[in-house]
Length: 553
Image (cartoon, rainbow, N blue to C red; front, side, top):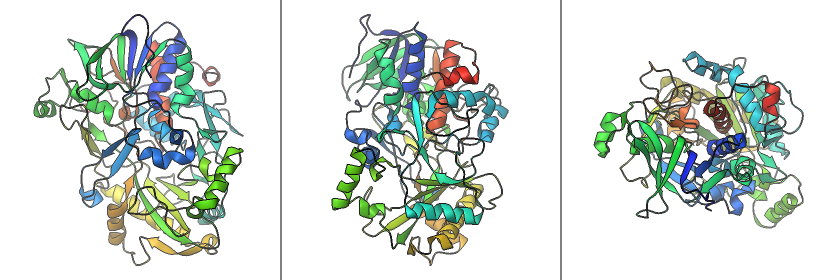
């Protein structure tokens, strides 16, 4: 797909990366009506059914045509394993391949950003932008939720006895039922909210990019792999891209700004390849420095998920429903708009809890699904009836780095999140496993529980549970922080609170890479919020009131 303007390859704004942030930002800048925008995406158009049917996520996330197949470096925290971290590589980015659970986090997450010196990023400041993005379907509190945005957010409408047992077990343990974890409080248990409309995934491309393309002010370039940012002195003037390794180099020029929305790994990598990054790294790569900025690539964080699997009895699980005639039954349900496993997320029910004291604010997220996957084969369901309850620490203290592997822009980056290297992360993870077991062993599960498969009942001590976590944990795909937002006196900061790259004019980063710390949530909702706020910062608009923001589409 290549929607070219007639006046050549010069635009007011060049946006690199058509994921959650890039699609939304292109929409907002185009709505202003004064500017031309070019949105550049390394991947192909989203013309694959698995990118649109929610149940196709497992095929999409493992397909290198539509997902970067990044991997971490081996580390102590993962018992020497590499962990694959797919990231979206198509229109919509990771919103086209992920688990589509919508989760903002806790107010304290954003108040912490403001307390670190980022003006205008406290919870009261960013709440209007969360509201602006969404179209909350169903009952909601208008102070917290938007009703007229472009992204439909609905509660999971598929019910299963094992999900009900999980909710009952959590309530019996002391967690409240929470009808809206994106409302007044996150704490509690219930069913996940997701961006699905009439059985179809609503990616950023569907919700925001396609309306922007209809405006005629957005030029889209797919299969366009950005190789470098161009500069005149310390001012960004555009980008260069190719459509294949060794292919012809094309250049786009930006009259006003270049904006990176490449994602948590690719945004810092592109800065480094363009000569902006730690001086020692640039020297090692043989890249001529444009501006030495030590924080580029540092402060990388991710959620580390540990899953327990149990056998189920007396009930069909997804493992049964996704095979043979039963799968065709589910397809038929989906086709006529009835609840079906084709329109559920990988995690159906949630819990937000404090792993060591349920009376306190949550520090872990619990993800429950009435199904299970083979350990040794990616994306293949177990041959027995299974259920999975996973947990991850919401605010990991461990941080790592992402570096360009070589000067070749087609080489995947070096990614090292340093999972479980901080003592608090290890303590919360072990406590989370114990809470998961407590729930699975509760009376609510008694009619359905048929023994623990992984890690197995013989694994009991803290050391054994930690070893299990190291040997079996996986990414939650939530890479953040490697272009950290912070005040000028912070040597690790890459962008200021207007998202402008320090030391460079005409260049911003506006995606998950700017997050100073991890929100207590899946990161997509916060990434949309960042793009909403970025649009106002770029256009110089004052933040309007909540009602006005909610009316934006």
